[in-house]
Length: 556
Image 1 (cartoon, rainbow, N blue to C red):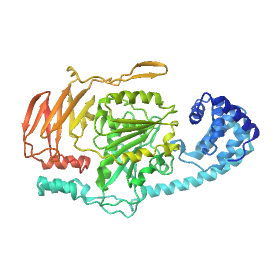
Image 2 (tube, helix red, strand yellow):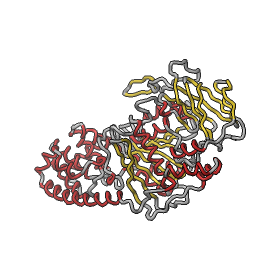
Image 3 (cartoon, rainbow, N blue to C red):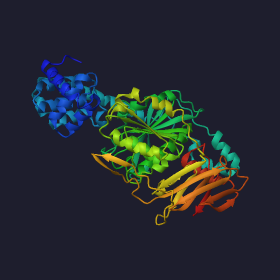
Image 4 (tube, one colour):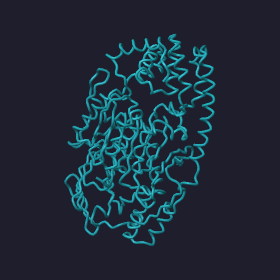
């Protein structure tokens, strides 16, 4: 960093002495950006100046540009000149601001009107044009590489429905199950350690891109861990990000650590009207992307993890609450543990798959105090949830990765239990009625709730107001289920119909399966393997460690 002008240093020293009693350094950057977006340039300039005095090496050409603009509006032109000069010197970051194009943003921004008076402006804009053009060339190369289909897997005979339906005719049930588990042949691959872009058709009008990282030591004959990473800033994003911006972005570096596990990574794309906040279809598309990759690559079904930052972490929490069956564990980073658009059923966190979270103590987007209140309440109700608090703001996972990398060492040692002998599940939407071997398929929300089916609502303090938060706005149905040998014990509340997925790995199909609901035996019968169901269920999930032999439909 170049020598700071004397006037600039004096202002900064004065500011830091005033600030130290009221704000921590980790909060300065967020505050500067918040006030800039509000066009409160006096406060924005103050926080930028103070932040950059102590964080001299943490500069990007977007943030120093904003610092220059803010300074110019409060007539601190020496500071503005310094910042705009730095903006021209710093490496060009075309991935910042979640993919808004850099050069065009700067030259078309009307806020830089006062900067044009500076002699540094002309040199800055000239340098920026050169860097912008160079970045465009780089983007085109990255795009071409992502869309290059030569080095990746594009087809697998064993991925085709007709292949398995043919085997269902020619093999008996035991042979068919054995083939699914042990004899799927995956294509060889000529290239590793690269990102590639696939696309998935959602409906007739929408096709969604998603990226896949193939690790350096991928071996088609070895089961490979899989991580799904959900990016942040979904709520305000009007379009899908450019896939070419991802590989060099700061955010994707959050999960660099998992490359040491030789893991495959899926990076879905979301936006405001198709993201992991409200849209059921977007969540289900992510599950389809997982199934798609399992068709082509040798994935360890019991080591699939989903994580994300900010809105992405909230999306990971949604899966833990609503569709947990495919995952070994979940991780939210600087997230809000709340489901939008439906109930936030804390009861569903009491199953075997753990949820982990990491929150910044100075996060002013999803404040730690709020997150911790929900966490502490949930833990007291039996949630399988661990939340860590770390010094840092909302960018903790991005800019202080060393402090969060430990969690990936934790995740790699967690293996999914495909057939848990105890389950509890609650839903207000039967689209999200399944967990593992049990699915609620119909609700009777007019019925009286069972005594144990209580509403779990934490008491939260927000904006100096303390009240009980309504996490269960919609009427729901709930199930408690345990398995002992070939006997299934079920307690139900407001559930009309139920589906049980029977596996030969969980039950002895040579003996009757007994089902007791609310202390009454409603069924005791032998269940044989159905080859059509085996194939249909496998094609739906490509799960080789959870093979469904048959399905029992229950009316309660």
